[in-house]
Amino acid sequence: MKMNILSSKDYKKMPWKNGTGTTTEIAIYPPDSTLNANNFIWRLSSAEISESGDFSEFSDCNRSLIISSGNGVRLIFSDTEKTLLAGEIFNFDGSKKIHCVLIDGKVHDIGLITKKDQVHAEFQLLEKNLKEYKLQAGTHIILPVTGKVKVETTTGACKLENLSTAMLITQSTENISIEVVGIAKCLLISIFDKNECSL
Image (cartoon, rainbow, N blue to C red; front, side, top):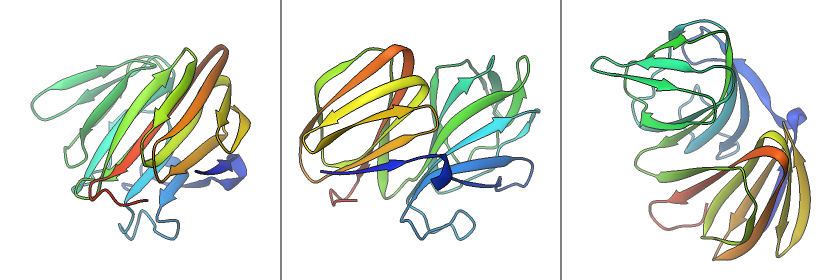
């Protein structure tokens, strides 16, 4: 298992793809890929949505979104709509045209974009401890949404606070423990290669 710890100094702030807001890129794979070049396999980011508007479109991608703070949003599609409140996770097709309406003031979100034909991802929002949790081969991201968490693996341990991220790369099944401190909430994101190759 390989573990990398990222902090806010490692993140990159940049405009949204459609230019109507800004996003903070937490991690991207491959590391030398970019959003503009569209040569990434996956990209994790956080953004502040301060006004209603359209989401960027990503025609060859799946997207997962969680509202990390604020009162939530309404996502309006051409044929339906979805109310997304804080702490809820929503998976959707990146090719869809979406208009985002703030429910009551600005929100912050955390979002993952993945290429449909290369990887699939699983999101979990943890509010309780995980003991001896088995990670399958892949890339796993642990990101506190609020508060602090402690992570123990077979190769070491770390403490994470809001704005810090642990990235674990596993070649086979590995055990980890995640301790959620107090009223903290933590995202566990697992990304798996559809061709069953190591990321």
